[in-house]
Length: 234
Image 1 (tube, rainbow, N blue to C red):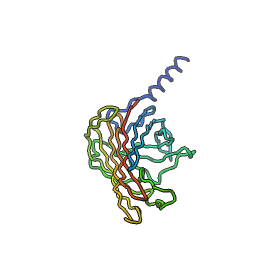
Image 2: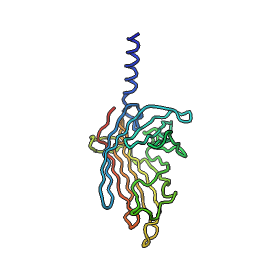
Image 3: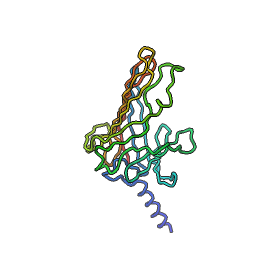
Image 4: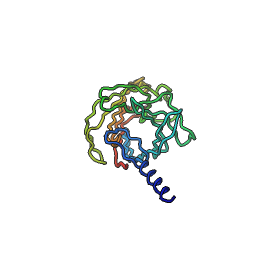
């Protein structure tokens, strides 16, 4: 009996620690762990922190199998792999007891990757870096807090060098949109070009991300966020 128990235990470890496939650009295997360096450049300051992401395992949402990715900032993301892509279906923050479904599934990466160059899609995004200079001033409207962003696969063969090493044959995804917001009394409304660039390496996943929200007015400040992979454990 103990031999059977031991065998089952070893099998569970093998499943939990299964390595991602070499052609998997968004691995969802249980037990994977990514550590990133996050740098945020604001017009008047520089912030840095580390972010850890771990794949916890699988669950079911609306009768669909999803994988849970937990971040060190306390947010869980629920992701599903479908025939045409990886989708985010829900998220759960520290103050929520249950995952909150997105209004519609958000594509993260199209599949199959080998046929994805030139693929374009739209999904909902929000400002990550724009902040008010003084509390109590003009607040952002609902349209400014969430807006559609158009993503495209620009390349399937990028080379990226980060602290974790040099990665070849990466997929480059770029997202773009123009956000209109009231800047200040002098200039009125401003159009802020928001750009996101994401590099995904085979067998690893996201190795680098750049987010630019350039804005420097009396009311709002934007900036640039860079996320780079420090280590990956499979």
